[in-house]
Image 1 (cartoon, rainbow, N blue to C red):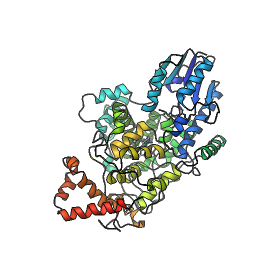
Image 2: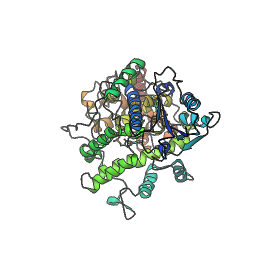
Image 3: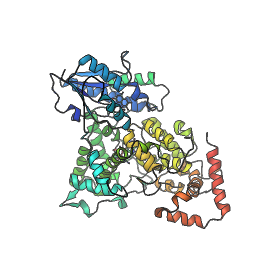
Image 4: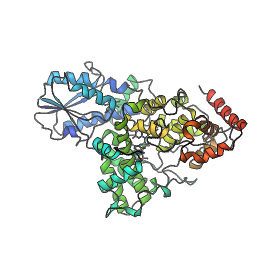
Length: 507
Ligand code: FAD
Ligand code: DLZ
Ligand code: SF4
C-alpha cells in the first residue's frame, strides 16, 4: 500500500485535496463512521442521516471508479469509535508508506490530526483545503493590522480577487451591495414555490432505520427527510434554486411566513458544507443567471455575498480566534436554554414556527435563526455556550466553523463586537413587520408590558437597560438609549418586571 487517503464526512468532493493524484493500483481511501463524531453533540436525526448516507453514497461512487475504499460502518463490531482509533487500525492493517488528509474544518478534529503526526507508525501529510475562496493565510493577510474586521471590506476584496460580478475592475451595477433594495415584506397572498426535495433511496432508508434505532432520543423527526445526499442530487437542488427561487431571493431574503420554512432560500448549505457542491461553482452559476437576464442583480449580488462574503469571513474569524472564541461571553449571559427550544411548545407563534421547522426539516432560514431563536436567546441572556451547542446540534448544515461565529458573534454578541457592530436585538415590531406570525399569536404585539404583551417587547428594553454599561456608548444604539434616557425609573422597573415575570415562568 502506498498512500492511505483519509476523507472525513464533510470532505465529500471528488477533487478534495486528499484525493488529488490518487493512484488506482497502489492507494486506498479511508472513510470512518465513528461514535465520537455522531455523539459530540446530540445531532438532529436528519443531520446524522444526511452525513452518513452521503458518506456511503460517496464511497460507492469512488468504488465505481475503481478506487479501493476502506469504509468502516458505525455498527461494525471492530469499530474503535474515534478517527484516531480507526486510522491506527487501518495503518496497522494496511501498512501504508504515508497517510494523506485534507485539513479538517473544525478545531476539535484539527487537534486530533495534530496528534497523528507522532506515533501512528506512518508519516502524515496534511493538505490545505482548497475548496474555499480564501485560505487561512489569505484571511490572516487581510485581517492583520486592521482594527475592525468588517465583512463588507473583506467581501469587496474577494469580489475583486476572484473576478465575480465585476466589470473592468468595478462592481457590476455600480454598487458593491444592493441590500437597500432587499428586505421586503412578503405580499399577503404570496404562495411560496415548491422546492426540490429528494426521496430517500435504499441506502438512505437503511441509515434512517439505523439512526432511529441507535439515536431514538435525539432531537427532530426523519419523516420529511429530503436533503440531497449525492452530487447529482445536489446539482438538481442548485438548479431548482436558480430556476424557482433566486429571482426573488433578494427581495424576500428577510421575510418570514407561517408554514413556509423555505420561501426563496437556496437550501444548499448542507450540500456545500459536506462538499457535494463547491462554493465557487454556486457563485458562478448565480452570476450566470444574472448575465443571462434570468435573475435581477439585487438577488444575485445578495446571494453571492452570503457565500463569497459571509461564509468565507466566518471561517476566517473561527480559525483566527479559536480556541478562545468558544468561551467568549461579553455580556456575561448565564440563563439556561429554555426547554421550549427542544420541545417547540410555546405560545409565541414566531418561536413555535421556527422551532417546528427545525424539528421537521433540520432547517430554518437565516432570519429565523438570527431574529427569532437568536434574538430571543440574546434578549433573555441565555448562556452563549448553551445556545451555541443547540445550533450545532439542530441544523443539517451545522458545523462548528460556520455555526460558532454566527451564534457567538452575530446572534448573541458574545464576542463583544468582533463580528457585528451592534447586537441584533429587536422587539416584536420587527417580527411583525417581517412576518405574518403575530396575527395568530396568543400574545399581543402592540402591547408592551403585562401577561398578554408580546414577550419580545419588554425583553428588548430590559436587555438594553441591563446591558447599559456595556452598550450605551455604541453609536449604533444611540437611538434606543436616547429613548431610554427619557424614561422615569418606574417605567424602567415595569419593563424589567414584565420581562422577568415572563422569563421566570419558563421551564
Ligand atoms: P441561503 O439563505 O440560501 O444562503 C445561501 C448560502 O449562503 C447558504 O447556503 C450558506 O452557504 C451561505 N450563507 C448565508 N448566510 C451565511 C452566514 N451568515 N454565514 C455563513 N454562510 C452563510 N450556516 C451554516 O452553513 N451552518 C451553520 O451551522 C449555521 N449556523 C447559523 C447559526 C446562526 C445563529 C445564524 C444566525 C446563522 C447560521 N448559519 C449557518 C448561516 C445561515 O443561516 C445558513 O447558512 C442558511 O440559513 C442556510 O440556508 P440556505 O442554504 O437556504 O441559505
Ligand atoms: C458530523 C459528522 C457526523 C455526525 N458523523 C461523522 C462520521 O461518522 N464520520 C465522519 O467522517 N464525519 C462525521 N461527521 C462530520 C465530521 O464531524 C466532520 O467532517 C469533521 O469533524 C470535520 O472537522
Ligand atoms: Fe412573536 Fe410577539 Fe408576534 Fe407573538 S406577538 S408572534 S411572540 S413577535
